[in-house]
Amino acid sequence: MSRPLHLVLIALLLVLQGQLWFGRGSLPDVMRLRQALQDQKQQNAAAQLANDRLSAELHDLKDGLEMVEERARAEIGMVKPNEIFVQIAR
Image (cartoon, rainbow, N blue to C red; front, side, top):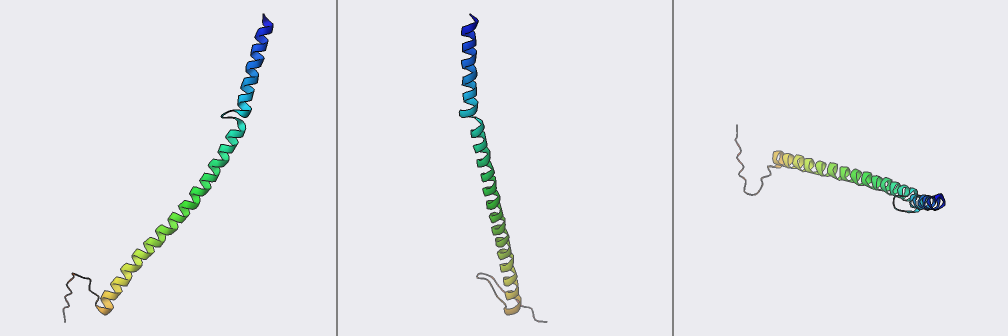
């Protein structure tokens, strides 16, 4: 009676070991997923850096245009469409 029980337990152990080494969630599978996660984190960091650069460039362009507009108004009297310019002489 103990012989069939031993065989069943050994078969169960082999199935569990096979699952551990070759099945879903196996050690090689986990290592592959960890590597994929690391690669994705690197890609995300590179994308975030590119986004930050574009955001800084956009901010500079926005501020730069405001400065150009302010200077044009002061030096050459630039007026926008549908805007009334009033100059008071002293």
